[in-house]
Length: 291
Ligand SMILES: NC(=O)c1ccc[n+]([C@@H]2O[C@H](COP(=O)([O-])OP(=O)(O)OC[C@H]3O[C@@H](n4cnc5c(N)ncnc54)[C@H](OP(=O)(O)O)[C@@H]3O)[C@@H](O)[C@H]2O)c1
Image (cartoon, rainbow, N blue to C red):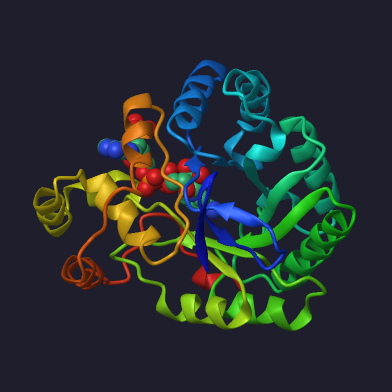
């Protein structure tokens, strides 16, 4: 369910809180200066969500940028939605330490959404039988931080249907969000249906195919027809299906461009044309072999 509030379009999570449909992706956003500039551009353009992770090694820079920039933009902590993720190296018995470290690095009392980044454990082969036990132990840690109010919502990332079913069967707290790769060439139909049926918000990453899809001929054709850029078309295709997006750019002009998604609509025909590109192509990692 999506809604447009004064804070921009958002989705209702199963926790009862809302998450903005648009957030700034920050993978490969490095260095205090670049981070500050991108966060500043995002706040100016109306972004109210920021997606980081322990493995991005920029939690501290994002926390610092927000502390300086929120007052400048007349905003406070409650006006923004911060997501971070547990490092695969902290999966299992180190999960609690990983959760504490993210809070410390960001310099926050609470994180709006905390995800298990990956179903596997760093250092273990994907087929290692310890993987399920480790991620279940991590989930229990996230549930405890959720109960203490330190994580307002908890969820997972890169989980396949198999990982999701296993989690949904054994959890005390139903995950609020599943964050996975999603774009016209990767429709993730099975996972989307499972999320819909289970009350889990399906969230997209790499909506631009890490940049590769910007030169797709169909994407360019649609962009030309509606007088928009390829990036806007790819992002609009997702949000028009109520799927939250996290475009990443370190360039302020692109951050602004990627944020202009809510003042136009793709026609039904163009939505169908884009969706027909589905071929299961992945530009990021493939979690299907993680037991
Ligand atoms: N949970 C996970 O495992 C996971 C995995 C991947 C990503 N994510 C999240 O999702 C976010 C987005 O995914 P992503 O970073 O992989 O890729 P993406 O957003 O699909 O694409 C980012 C790339 O496209 C370029 N770009 C952005 N806007 C553009 C525009 N308007 N015109 C031309 N080029 C543009 C960027 O370059 P410049 O920076 O130079 O502009 C960058 O190289 C990540 O940053 C991260 O927060 C999560």
